[in-house]
Length: 327
Image (tube, rainbow, N blue to C red; front, side, top):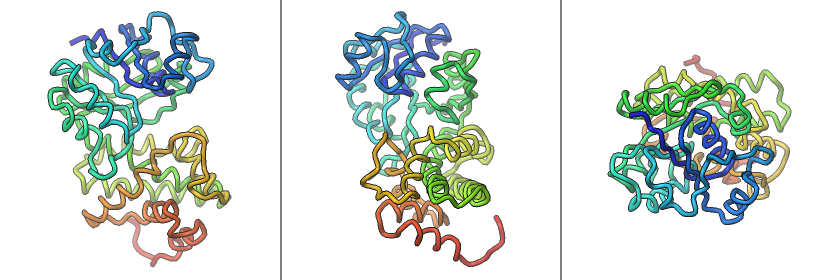
């Protein structure tokens, strides 16, 4: 199937960027936004409030309501991870059975401990869940800078067709069938990015940063194995690739949140955008404990976020762990 008509649900920075790249790939695109102020700005100025300076071309249709997006052959769900359930519940009565719904959020739902495609399947069993993740910043994609991501669906043929529908000269989706592995990489790296930001904010140096990312990846890989991810997925774009990007750039909201923590701010006082790792950290840790997965860096992040440990105490807890063989 060619998937000529694509709907993007959510016109934040990432949703706008994905709508642009779909249009550049020659698709007919409908963009819907729930926030009234941003929706009004989209219609009046053809620009998202969250991606200023990037014009939305006239061929992208700004949907007046959610129902206007429901006739698409594929949908990109670009809302925060903790809002996926609410969005899919609203979509469920409208969407055509068999429509692929590609989740573009990186996280695990609080309370249910469900991954994003499981939330979609539970709320709209008639659709086909898929996931898009990888090392990508919205501003880069919107400005046509080269970007590669992973798009996974359980049906490999469908995954390939969706990747071809979204791909363009500057946006390269690799397709895969390891849905769970792609979801795990996107969720866990946000928590580790907060840790990397703390290292930067505390000015602990490049050696500490490299050690943090390396040992953080070991945690991600252990968690992935416990929950059925393939090793090659963990080593790929949606695992190691996304971890490297998110742990090294202030464009990452999770990294920037960590920098603020390292600089002495309290978690509740930090503003400046959604950091998904804040919500994911306690859930990730609970799931790790259920499978007896050792994740000391993630545990330290969760303790700092809940203010059970200070930043300095968390760093000391990691540095004073018993010496052991590397694995």
